[in-house]
Length: 354
Image (cartoon, rainbow, N blue to C red; front, top):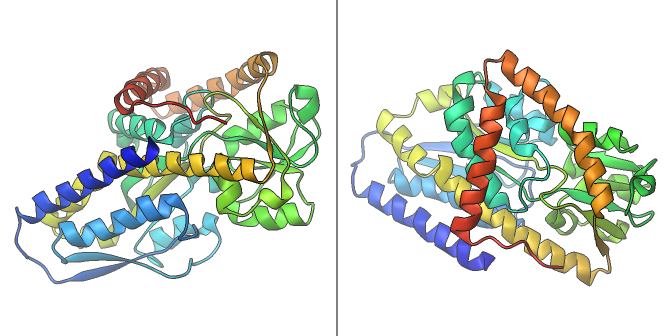
């Protein structure tokens, strides 16, 4: 099911590139832009997502603007925001949750209990962003090209199966951002922030007991050796947003014609197939977890109800902060939920089985 959806999305991406190529002729000197990432090249998000976007830019602009993926990352993931803004790199994706205080509005797309589909969450959020958040212009000095969110975040640990709040209390678990950190504290967890690139080492040295992470992250970042138990919640306990930016000066140096062409293969168009790639990654991640003997447990109803109760004040606090920026947070959330349902129906979404 996921491979078929992904194939459809990639065919659509190629079709748009071809149509745009037939419309315009060469009008500017060739530009070669640098893209760097910390994500491994075998990751489904890279192979069927970001790398597809990279190739699409040269195609859609008929070689006037090309993006080249560097063979190695530039440094720790939290530094990529400044790498782009300061011009150390031309284009890249960042995780806004890794730089607390700089971004606020993306956190809506990271709210828990909404959907198990990264594709639905991603595309729905793009539509919400265009209607409610774009005017806020949170990313000064950078041009937003597209974004995506990963699949449902769950509890992984190597101590015990988590079936109640009593079971999770006291565990030292890695968190990736403010939303899940706040929820983890409410659960009695000791949250330890770290980017995904440090998780393997932290687990191997016993610095943490486990992680809040996706299904796919266990496989793609080679953590299965150090994990024994996973607890899932419908709609996920959190998600993480990735935002792709270009340095603003670089963007401004591109002709209006090619800017329009680049955006024709970015935005919701690329969000669609990158989100689908994440869903495929989770299917593969579940298979890998099962093959490695990791026990997967669905969160019991009473624990789930308690987690939702704990989440409520965290969400309310975000609403206050959004209102201070002139944003109708409740309207944005209502639209987000409605769009998720529409997209799940459109793609025939069915949560992966385990």
